[in-house]
Image (spheres, rainbow, N blue to C red):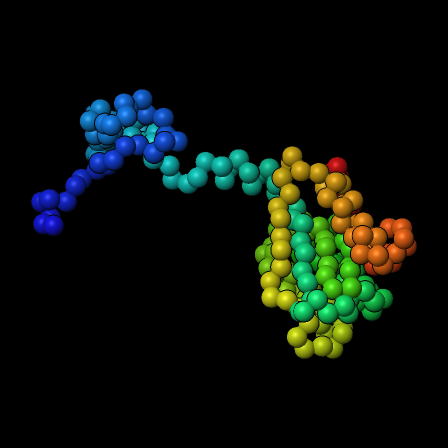
Length: 195
């Protein structure tokens, strides 16, 4: 295709989610809406072009600092975490995090995985990696962790309390204790005001 045959401007129908009042089967060009040299910010084409997805401004400022639900697991589900030694190191690391803008809320340490809620202004991956490293050094083991972790950003419509109740009941569902109050490896470092 020679340079003179290269199409200029949009030649297909507008995306279905964009309202342009352009009849189906015609293009933006056909309706005179496409002007490549338009500097008018109110021109129809400039209203169709976005610099970033519009939802980003709506989501993240409301969740600052964001609250994450995090889970990470031992390699091959090796049941080595439910000990006083691990629990003590976990709490120590989480308390130190408050000096760096990290606020751990409720948590449960199961024999082969950890659930926690954390609010932070730093990099979540780096913080989880540091927590894993601290626990690994405490247990003096080499390959302790499954690679990565699961995280979920809690939004305003989600209930921190409801997710917590489900996680808090894990030891009972796993048959480790008869009542949630009997599991010694759970608690709360910082209290969140979310319900």
